[in-house]
Every structure is written in structure tokens, then in C-alpha cells.
Picture 1: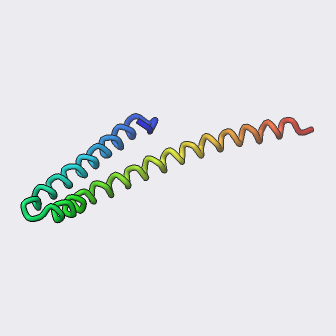
Picture 2 (picture 1 turned 135 degrees about the horizontal axis):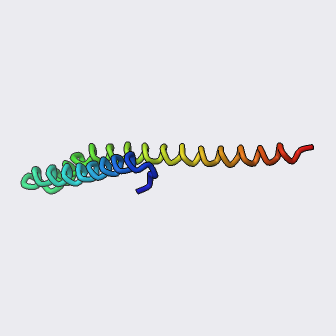
Picture 3 (picture 1 turned 90 degrees about the vertical axis):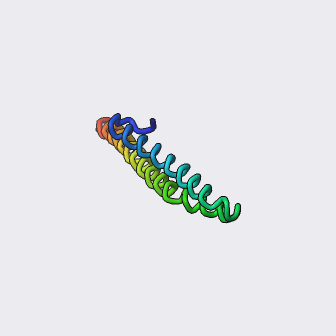
Length: 92
């Protein structure tokens, strides 16, 4: 779990698991529905069936990365303010 906020982290990881399940089910069901016609057509339809889940995964990962970036920027801002306060206190 990458997010430190427990409820938000649980929800995001749950949605990420659902997205991965959508990828596998979409690819498998699309592949099996066209397998009798042609193997190449089945591969292409399997890839197309996986696209909605892949898009969902990318969107959720973007949310996670943005949240981590925001938390890291807050830490850096706090450290920079502490350094600035130390330097202001040292000046005569």
C-alpha cells in the first residue's frame, strides 16, 4: 500500500484490483469469443477487450502518483521553511 491515508488507500487499492480484474476478464472473454473464427482475430479482440481495464489502471496510477507527489512537496516545503527560519534566526 503506497498511500498512507488508510481509508483512501484501501479504496484506491480496491479499485486498482477491480481494474486488473477487468483487464483479465475482458481479454479472456474477448479472446474466447473469437477463438473459433481465427487465432489472429482472437488475439486482436483480446487486446481490444483489455483496453478499458488498462485505461482504468492508468487513471488510478495517475491518481496515486499525483497524491504521492503532493505529499512529497508538502514535506519539502516544510523542510525549506525550517531552513529559512534557521537562517533568519542566525542573522544579526
